[in-house]
Amino acid sequence: MRILLTGANGLVGQKIKEALARDEQAELWATSLHPEINVLKGNYHYHTLDITMPSMVDDLMQRARPHVLINAAALANVNHCEKEKAECQQVNTEAVTTLIRLANHHKTHLVQISTDFVFQGQQSTYQEDDPRNPVNHYGLAKKQAEDQVMEEASLWSIVRTILVYGYVPELKRNNLVTWVYQSLQQGKPIKVVSDQYRMPTLAEDLAGAIVQIARQEKEGIYHISGREGMSIEQMAQRVGDYFNLDTSLITPVTSAELGEPARRPTHSGFNLFKAEKELGYLPHSFEEGLEVVEQQMNKFH
Ligand SMILES: NC(=O)c1ccc[n+]([C@@H]2O[C@H](COP(=O)([O-])OP(=O)(O)OC[C@H]3O[C@@H](n4cnc5c(N)ncnc54)[C@H](OP(=O)(O)O)[C@@H]3O)[C@@H](O)[C@H]2O)c1
Image (cartoon, rainbow, N blue to C red; front, side, top):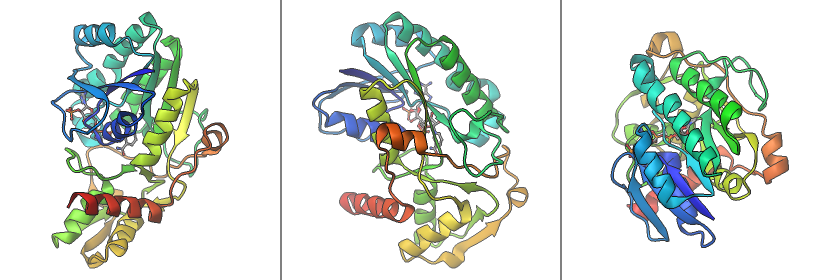
């Protein structure tokens, strides 16, 4: 099976690349906007690809003729999206129009990665078919991309996820766990929001589920996250405790006190029933996830 992956330099993209590069049944074409970071041993091609350039995507789709196209490319910085709405729209929505058109043309199954931020965030657990009502521009752009996929793609799946954490030796954007770990280790005080609740997702759990969905060409929407709901501040405390770091450097703050440019959903969590039933999805606990992160940090340091 040939699989074309976009956004392969991102956290999620790198974990999908890792999973597929060692899979002998898959021929992986990994792509991202910039040259590859973290080159792996394994059986795959790497190409730079800007998904906002239809002619580049067209050319690569013609060469790869993939059975499945996994779109893990995104402008995922929520505050940046609030300030640069046109850029956010271009990468997170308009580029998806191109991917859908070319996927349809080549009879390729499109796997679009999406987010809990399509929901308003007033419920502790959301199901796949719950009504969406985003509270910021990033969520709106991702919702519009979902709408297009559902309405126009012939073969598709949408995988929504929540606050992804994990370790790779090089990463352009920190995630909650690596940010807290690095800050506390360097003795830097941090302010962490205490009135937003999430179900954090280990990047390996997500990548495993995406690969399974891609390989089985599963149709429809899937919710993939961890199983434990907690506030972001509780998450930070647990990271500090796990790594025996000084948690007195953590100051809890409210969303209002933090005053970020983009509003955030207050509560977001997923009902994982469909993923459990159809994929046998069994996520790590947060504690086990931190063990995975620690093992990887030890391997590379
Ligand atoms: N991380 C989370 O907590 C989270 C939560 C919910 C949903 N998601 C979703 O999960 C997916 C992956 O997110 P992530 O956390 O892996 O994000 P990420 O680490 O920021 O990676 C996104 C990647 O997209 C690539 N990219 C940006 N613009 C591009 C363009 N024009 N053409 C091609 N590639 C481009 C970048 O590649 P270069 O590095 O090569 O520039 C970047 O590495 C996204 O759809 C996001 O919305 C993430």
